[in-house]
Image 1 (tube, rainbow, N blue to C red):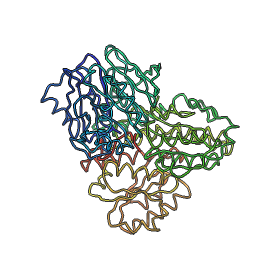
Image 2: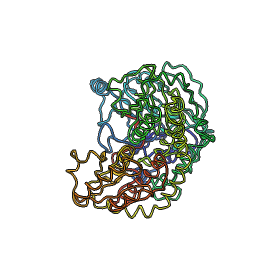
Image 3: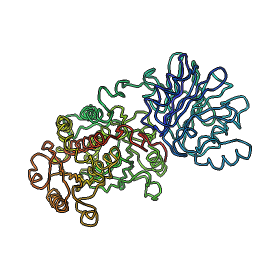
Length: 610
């Protein structure tokens, strides 16, 4: 979850490093630090807190040198503190490194190293690695690194400096993301592309077990057996401006407003006049193969999981095959039933989500057909899946996901159409309606964004709230879960989602005078009538109800205290504009409450540890 940057070149390294970790701060911001090779020594500056505090430390003392590493931390082992901040260094100052991931066997190694006389100055698992490398070091840092990582268990990416070899850095990748940026007279290491996009668009995507030796003029990459690896250059196609705020106050509100574009980009080239001609990247599942599939899993975490719940309901409805949606962190430990007749669908914004990636690997090992939905080209999940479908949402920086969720839903609509066509289990008219939903979603989502100020006014009901309910039925319940997640993530209000019909089976006891209840009424039909009855139940207990409904559902106005209207449309088309309303409510609730919207406490963007 942490962010790593490394540099070897002709510039002052500290400037490149600080710029890089600022672009990776979404990966963690409990502490930050830099290390630079200077005059045959390694100079280190680090501090608990945001990168700005580190910058103030650096401004007070000149750090010169053209090779260095940097880190922005999301704490796992050891609370945020100066001593637990990265980089970590060996007792004699010879070896310094930064780390993203978790070393699972660190206690055993730590005990061995303490017996050898090594002193530990932090509570982190990372410090074990730096002392272990020092223990193996006999004049060649690459040899020492290979010997040390042979002892490590867990997930990690590392960037390492050696005072005796000040012109190069070593980079290691195992189950945590790491890329190498290729420049002219300079080269880069980073956890993610935005960190180096100011300097280069050419990168190498490191694979598991690979180790790189990086200098200003040379990049050497080796596999786990130390064989040289020849890699293809990956060309980055998006701009640095795409990863900046672009005049908005926060990344989150910028990304909320980018959703119509994300939807259009995700649909581009995939719609071809009718549902029968939908095209999905390298989707190559044949009708014969699909008919053999008797078990479908959708596995993801957080927001991606809630998108997966929508996918589950749509695929079941249109294909009449049973679908199970599971949280990735639980999936592997539930002894899932997987074989060659299983279709495994992994959803991940970053393509590096540790639990989802490990679940994918389990599914592949057991013979399942693996399909990935991700936003990052070249990510681990994309590379390891049999079929990859990209959400062309562009870089998403805010910790709370918005535009990628909408793009994931669009991909799930398209995937449902493809699978339903293979299954031949539903009426053509139904598929035409789902296809039509894809066509109109961007427009009706833009119409919601055009009413941002109106929705922002409604969000004032959350200013003094300690609790909030989100209720809905069917697909609206899936939206309720995503809406409650957004609210709790960035406003710190205790927000819970409930199936509207379950309120009277316990949760209604929590209702009190004035508690905000967001009632999802985006889906017209039989369930809407039942939800209106549940709204009456909440109002009878003193709740203040804000409903989200289509404009032709006028009966909603008779029951709710307020209604935020979305355009009348097919039910599936209503999902994304309804969730955009929820995103705007959460954003302004957090803003009114003075919360750090882009960097909510205790959270990081890309969860690359289990």
